Length: 217
Ligand SMILES: Nc1ncnc2c1ncn2[C@@H]1O[C@H](COP(=O)(O)OP(=O)(O)OP(=O)(O)O)[C@@H](O)[C@H]1O
Ligand SMILES: [Mg+2]
Image 1 (spheres, rainbow, N blue to C red):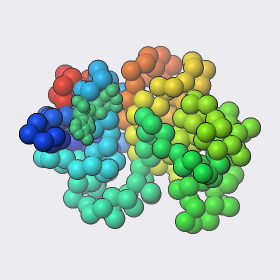
Image 2 (cartoon, rainbow, N blue to C red):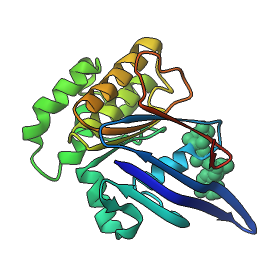
Image 3 (tube, protein in one colour):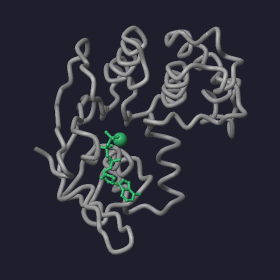
Image 4 (spheres, rainbow, N blue to C red):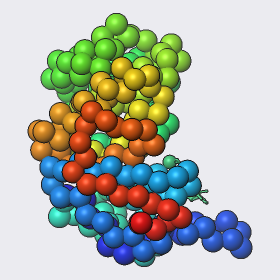
């Protein structure tokens, strides 16, 4: 479950205050997939980052499952992401000097990557990346990097998936692979918040939210 209660997020730039989110309340029940839409600058990435505990709200509360994300210290928020939340970023954030499969295995490198290699290869297969396992990010196309970032996010079978424009760089076929994989995670019980400008015809969201200027419509 993901829940926001009267969340405000203000960014201060000198004297100017940007109200990126202004009193947003929403809930995505466990095992449901919510689509988040809205024009550029409406606050979608800000909302995803708050759910992931990457930033803190100015006011209000953010819950991931029973956990109040903004009530945790930085170390616990990091642990929450490492164990239970997957974030697929609009800008992949792959590690440039690691190969594709090392990037996918990154969440587990501190543990025992050998145990997870089979899962990593299975995900890379499903995302048509098997032939790119030893490539580094600069040796992959933007679409391949995006799929690699998704495989990394799903490696630890997260309870919550936060995906910010995961199909932004993809052609129709790859977009379908990515959305199907996210949909399969919902079928396994994950709660999903998906940001997309593009049509998501072949998956059927349980809920849809639209942001405009930091407000839900
Ligand atoms: N660190 C920051 N400091 C100041 N303003 C910011 C900061 N980050 C975002 N903003 C502003 O907050 C608003 C919301 O930004 P956000 O990135 O959440 O939009 P978005 O809906 O994800 O847009 P896009 O569809 O282009 O990705 C924008 O007006 C943006 O300029
Ligand atoms: Mg964004």
